[in-house]
Image 1 (cartoon, rainbow, N blue to C red):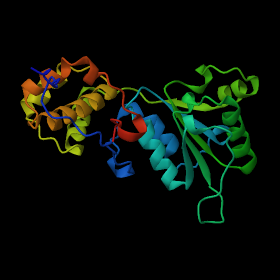
Image 2: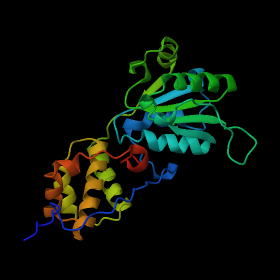
Image 3: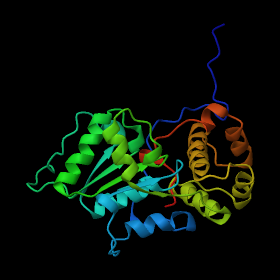
Length: 251
């Protein structure tokens, strides 16, 4: 007899790897005490400018910094780049338009491997009078760099932390993420999940993603049994999802 095919722990089908792309609109952002300071610094009505025209938002995965970056970039006609794309960087013109970009936004700037390119970006933006918004997991002053000039500029960037949401906001966030993925989950199952998940926005993101994949793979609705299987499956639970493509945010 031939070998039996491997089975999925929560079903027999394989989930197709379609990237979940969340909405990054200002109206979709959930305001909370944990992000109040960041919102104040990004308020378009605020007359207060950024020190040296630069600002960094930092916090754990899923805290909402990428969402805020996208909102700010759209409102300021900013060139939006992932930190990993900063290689031999030069400020390009906007496609099909003679005017240059009016601002620069860099997501996961602390993941930039080309330190010289990051330094050049900061210098070029300063020379052009362009504001720069960065996001990262830690404040720029704590980033490791071998370039003295870059270290000096990073220490001078005003940084604003985004904390973790409170219990009430975690519930709202999980419910929003489940709805965003068109998952119908009974209130009792939501309560069961919230009693067992880590108290972070990133955990809510990971749970919604894993439940979505498990429901698709098994062809079943999200029940307590399926949720338990997901939480007991470490490879599924700890799979990393890039924040810019499918992060749980304080939306």
